[in-house]
Image 1 (cartoon, rainbow, N blue to C red):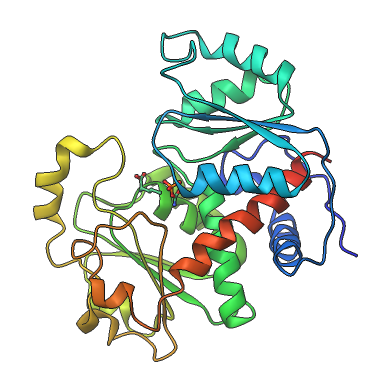
Image 2: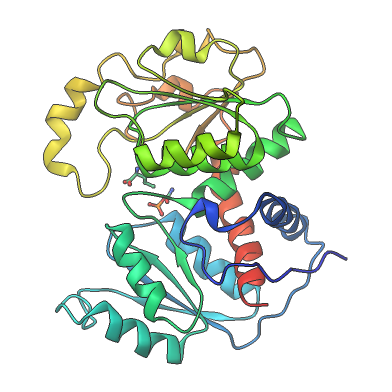
Length: 308
Ligand code: CP
Ligand code: NVA
């Protein structure tokens, strides 16, 4: 039976907090959880959830993951805890890590997440920041591996805003050696530090491409991925971004340029007929709900390793 290994890093703040080998281990473990081949008991362990932004999938998949592992969660709503009043992160982190065994945090700035990790005596998980969404990418690559068996010939094209989801897809793609193409309007490119880190990992292989042309980027791709144009916290930019992203909708015509075996992914929640058409989301190529389910299995694997 596969046993969870202790990860070299205490925290999971970024997709680069695991090595390639650890990432593969998490994927194997997640698959074993999905197939019900594992019976790991984390009895009495408590996961604290601190969510400064809304969530359906991440919150519930963490809660169910802990329940399946025999542990429990405490869901902290910033508006009904002292977090919303502005209690310093360094105090909140020191207190909560005396009660909880692990913390999952969804917030705006990556530096705030890092501040939690600095002061917490227990592992901290990135449940989404403006910079990264590493738990999402773990489930995404699990879904891709389930579909294609391995990552050898996978070409992933992401069409949309180059922010958190795209950044984590790039970093994991680099770890796994997957060709990643990001298509976005000018000015919406992924984070430069993320691009630099990925390029270093890819070494001299030219496997990361950033372009403004959806059709050429989709040619030969077998994973087509999109995300909302306006992320949480960007509600006041919606009108402007809707205009800037015209022509970047994943529709049937665009999908027809991809490989015949191409699958469609979306982290959800989606705005139908903005970044993706209703027809594409409901098509046979969609693996979006497998992808959402895999959040649960991937996070069971992650928590099991972080609590070793
Ligand atoms: N994909 C994702 O993180 O969804 P939620 O915002 O619902 O958690
Ligand atoms: N980019 C989106 C992802 C939601 C899961 C956001 O940050 O709102």
